[in-house]
Length: 70
Image (cartoon, rainbow, N blue to C red; front, side, top):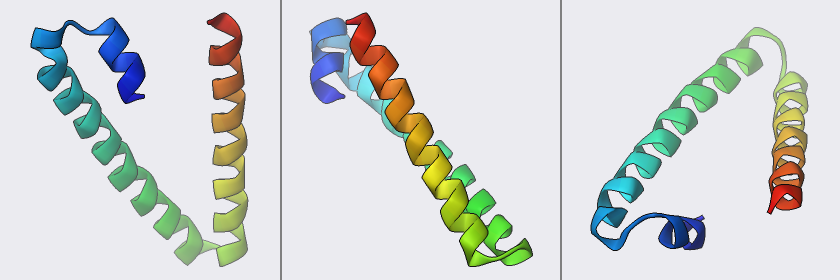
């Protein structure tokens, strides 16, 4: 990810771009971890594993689509 940003973003804006990217990822991690915790509490740990497996499949799918475009 860092390499991609370095190729796209101007050097003088790199710090700002990285700060925004880190902020987005931390917010997503906090929200998704809390949501997953609530899911596990409400249903069962197996539901959490199924949800995480689905997220991984979606991530691999997005990566494949992005790789085909480049």
